[in-house]
Image (cartoon, rainbow, N blue to C red; front, side, top):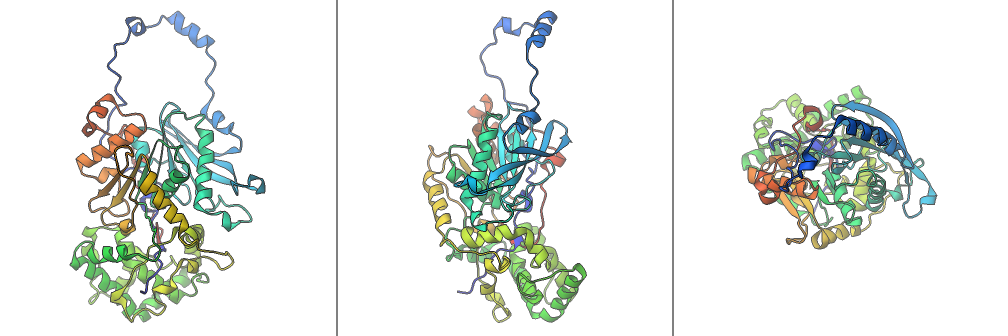
Length: 506
């Protein structure tokens, strides 16, 4: 069976900066007080003398920045103002190898969106670089909490120098989170949730597997689970059944036409590369980069687009060369296979080729038109040759999958109905005592959120998140249908940032 490594279009989509879509969940006040009556004496206002006396005798509260920077190994890069929050960009000293901390350290970048030490905290992982501007993940907006966002090890600048690539694996990354959590928990003592989307959702899941006692709940969005590296028929089924036959045919015909017109379209790709100063040493040549981009096209469409966008797909038999080239460039990016397009994602491709695996599927409609074929575009192709790689045989993903199925507790997985990355997904342990949940957002792509669920399912999911965070009001505890987010929508903090880095990456 001829298959290809599906590893080149950024799935960080919405999740690189991770905002809530806002509005649809609604707003609410903070948790309601309990029903117990407050003693009359406690309700009486204090006298001015008493208040002044208490203020004079109480020690001054230590500034949160001072408390954070008192953590050994923590340093400040920058503080940025944001109404209602304190936002810090920080570095934290981590061991390169948590099993042998004496073998060196590196600086790992993180951000902290501080609300209040008396609020819950959300540990956000994007799986790639950390955003350097204030933003809220959906769970952070739901629970009105603090948010810690951690850059994944080996994404620059969070990379040791020189880099020992053998220390880039899912357990070392989970240990990064665990070590940081252990320090911050001393300051943020309320409930903690972890979250992330796509590779960030995978990261949150792996963290839970290795350190299941750290978090009080996990909300993982659109997290792929490629546990069977050589059995990916689920992806073939997805592309045979997604949307309507008319839409599928329109996309497949355009993809085929791009290879039929290889000559003029390749000339355009070469001209674009020359204009941008792009080189293609890693993948091999601009010709190989061109074919790789064409093969990524249909996947990229469903990752970022929706059924309603099918009407805008050029009709293959009547489209001009420019129309085809420009549309494919918009959806999958002819620069994505260049050295410049690949270099920032070397850590992802390294992990895909050593532990994570990657989805693969067939192209029956392209038979006879591929020069290099799907078998060429494997993870090794996207990693510079001076970095050694060795596949672990699938043991890491089998271990995680087995743990999620048997032992997962208080985990929520959210998927999009029309997202190819959800073809193979996590299936957490069932049963009331496990308190796990899986939601599929109708018609959604790789940007699926709780806010896109039907009203009843949305309320149930929100109620669960509030419960895990310890901020569900008595009303919500008795009637989950009344659950609402605890913050008002903020256009800057909550806007979903669609990160169209081109190339297929989770």
